[in-house]
Image 1 (tube, rainbow, N blue to C red):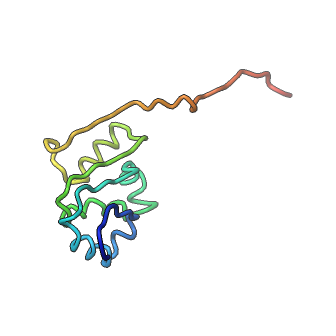
Image 2: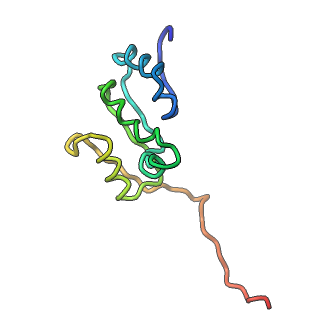
Image 3: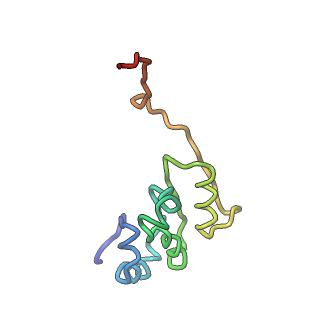
Length: 116
């Protein structure tokens, strides 16, 4: 990697590769934020579908920069599990939760008669 790095985008599988880890170690002083999008996947998919999600928080030993976990589908139980599995202390965490305004998403149903 040559030049300035603005954004590094990776999958949990790729970031687990030694090549990526070595690059992160070399660039660690230039990384100002780590963002884990779709953070609910750490808990919901980690153990079965994509086990490398379980290792995302291992990057904390390499990167001392602030972290942000983003998700639009997070229950309180999942949020608690993310916090527990991340290794962060509750006193170091700020949670900002907003209800999404999605006027294009709605549920529409009607009662019909059974057909014989």
